[in-house]
Length: 137
Image 1 (cartoon, rainbow, N blue to C red):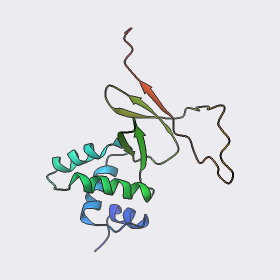
Image 2: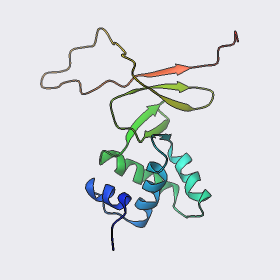
Image 3: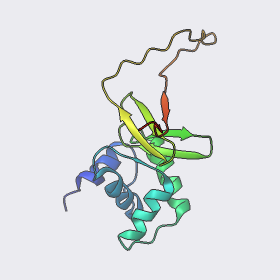
């Protein structure tokens, strides 16, 4: 039996391809680059007629993040989104819709960064530009 690309992707990341991981990976990565919360992904699981607990969805998203398959974005401390695009990029966050949009090809400059502690270096900086509707239009 030939392994599917999803199974190979999980194995390459060092994850055992359980039924639930394969299902969640296919839902996550089958639609291109996207941003999801655990609740959104859990809703997609239910929409396709599968049964996976919300706790399992959370755990799997964190396993995928630890394996480098996803990037976690904390918004407002209480809401986490997971990004299938793990490259170094920044985001717009549309507050009233709870929607994240990738910022492509923009050079964002951050001046006045603090010196990291001895023996440490800055690996990357996450910038989230928060947006609200322009009431003038």
